[in-house]
Amino acid sequence: TVVVLDYGSQYTQLITRRVRELGVYAVLLPGDVDMKRITDLNPKVIILSGGPNSVHVEGAPTVPDTFFDHCESHSIPVLGICYGMQLIVQKLGGEVKSADKAEYGRMPVHTVNASSLYGNEGDSTSQMVWMSHGDEATKARSLPEGFECVGKSDAGAVVAIEDAKRKIFGLQYHPEVTHSERGKETLSHFLFTVAGVTAGWSMQNVLDEQLEIVRRKVGPDAHVICALSGGVDSAVAATLVHKAIGDRLHCCFVDNGLLRYKEQERVMTMFKEHLHLPVTCIDDSERLLGKLKGVTDPEKKRKTIGAAFIEVFKEYKQTVENKTGVRPTFLVQGTLYPDVIESCPPPGSDQKHSHTIKSHHNVGGLPKELGFELVEPLRMLFKDEVRKLGLIMDVPKAFISRHPFPGPGLAVRVLGDVCAEGALETIRAVDEIYINAIKDAGLYDQIWQAFAVFLPIKSVGVQGDQRTHSHVVGLRAITSSDGMTADWFQFEPKFLQEVSAKICNQVRNVNRVVYDITSKPPSTVEWE
Ligand code: XMP
Image (tube, rainbow, N blue to C red; front, side):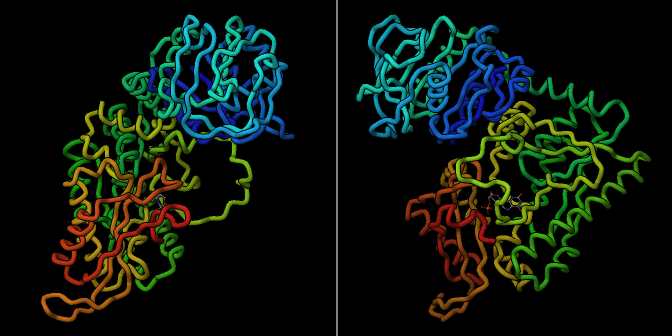
């Protein structure tokens, strides 16, 4: 195991992913954990991440007092990146200075001595790297005892240090980002040659290990249920559990009346014919739409949908119990690693007092009162790893690469009353045209999420020489890595022109199409 200690850099998760991509299992812990949490994992290597703080600031996060002694006595190699390197210098008695000039962005660095970290013999090589720091360990002579400077920037700042004997290394730049030309090579050399770890983490290992864990946890008799959302995570989690325990798994898929065009048919075919999952489709659309009629407040809509889902789920649980004669005691959830990681909060954030922007509803968020024990086979995986796991279980690629879809479905994409005449029907038709056009243009996989929005207003148009008074629809497409922040996607104007024409020609009721050019923040991804 490689332990990555998180000091709050925006790239910390990336370090963990890069290490895993190299075939070595890595876990992320908050930078200020106690030594026991670290030693319990018996790490072969420890990486200290970057972070936005300065080591000079009172209360800045740091390693436990016994950290370096422990690593030295157990021969655990340490690599500090950016803030992590400054921690090494400061903790081991060197001097960290505020740089006269902060260095941000891509810049060249050069090796200056024979180096164990780079595996070079002293010849000077250069590479472009990604730098983002204000402090630096400037002068080679103010490094801690035993350390040598092995890399410098153009401006002469120390950017790579090592104590090859104690196997402690520091990089001022970020080898984990792709902008650092030879970053991956350096990480690989550090792990395999310097630290001597062996690559053994592959998706097949993960699958075998998780199958065993699920079998052991559930035992030979218990029954398990799972609510499928139609998304990738719950489907991959259910497929894995089904492989482990067979038909003691019972899945439901709830059609709440807020699904996209032909979604129910499409996902049910996927679940039954391709994934061979035991799944019941529950049609709750009439009941839920009845409750939503006239509701226009976005939060009220979300809460109504969330509560209705819990009701349906409780009924399903009872149905399974009646059918099998056994009360299901386990619940499968597709929780991913980013939801599990305890990270160092970014400076200035007050996580305890964060405002609720939206009451999220998703099938993974069933309340604890239901009394289930959770089975979460994806808890240690990132989204891209879940996709790989799905692929080795023969989940079709087209399904694996689906865009996320929110739990409250089209209710947050029809502004105002979702039951307004023609609204759902219109938005389904528009969305289908839009998504198909994106797929035809080969852009689907470049986009994190794309969808259409129904606006409860009408505008005047002219179609076939006639004045029309019809609806406006919005199109949105974003790029993002986690949905937390997002940029709008820059289509070619010709693409938008063609989609707009197609929508107005094919969807009755629509005579105007607008494209959303707002990032998140200030907007959110969904319009409600
Ligand atoms: P927002 O609109 O909050 O969306 O910027 C961020 C991401 O979350 C999705 N989203 C939801 N997903 N239940 C979900 O499962 C919800 O209630 C929900 N609301 C938003 C949204 O589609 C985007 O990917």
